[in-house]
Length: 266
Image (cartoon, rainbow, N blue to C red; front, side):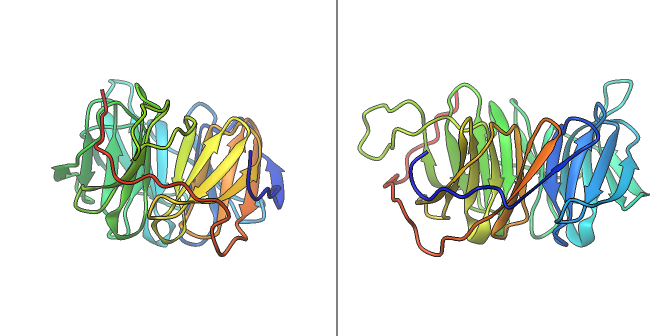
């Protein structure tokens, strides 16, 4: 990758391949493992703290206030549910309108997305749909209710504000539009600092600012999962290895003018 190249500042090995990744407000890292049956909690330096065994088969995890673990699960009857845990203690569960992509906003609302639709729900499971989620295979929720969606039929990423309006977007491959930067398809996304975004690629990562400017690049593995709590540190998982990256740039090192283009999920 071109631009600023930073190596991982820390790595550690998990007991099983990572199937989902999230970072809590405390900075602790949560890894979904063992076929969706357990979530391991690590401190930021990779020391194992606890293992929580969820009730259903987990397909996605996110963190709320006070490191409340929010899990999208499917039970033996095929019913989709949201489970909430604090440490090893079960808090509650309710039916999920969609999933398995999951995130938690700064106001505590739970964002759920699938290839069909997207919903924003409260702690009792009631809420309303949000726009742009058709064909969604990636979801990241940032500050002030802003959210990002990665599509499947196109390789684009679209950034929305809390009201559901498009802030910026890009698509791959280039369609010739002057407002459409020809960028590569991302494998995974995570909310970054100050409303920005981290993206994972087969050969590393990029950090984008909230206005759609490429600010920083990192060399790294072809990670399937990345996560951040909105700070300068983010984590990536590749099989049984978790990598920690500490962003260092304070000004953009490379720019791309994206403009705002209409979301075209097919």
